[in-house]
Image (cartoon, rainbow, N blue to C red):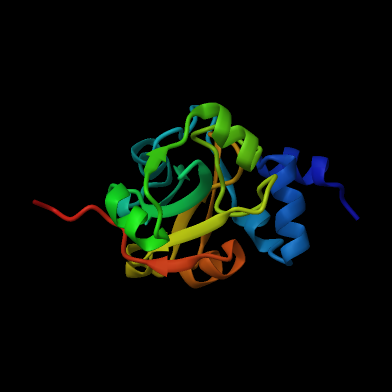
Length: 170
């Protein structure tokens, strides 16, 4: 049996993410993960590295809803409408979380936050736009590694509520 550290080294994924994937029974994620030495800190960089449409990238974005962290999963070509998130959650204010809150909440740095496998249990919202594709690509715990996953599987393992929080074109 391999250790999380060995699997992380082989796949390029963060060890905490490897442990979460193994606990969820998603070992195929590690086999299909891709590591990019130049990094994929932004959705555009990830799409270019993978060779896919920007909308096939799943961004994992942390916001503070009345000070409480919430993770929003959004397709890479779209922006989150914080007013729609506020309405969805029934809170007074939603702001983008700073780097410290992101790391404290998830255990990962901005640019590498995966959709699941976080340090703390956090409310997760997944925008319906992710379902426009059979497979999306998400960060594997660091800005150098991404993995493909079916949106239905991603949403299920992230424990996400499916919502419409994408910013609409003017």
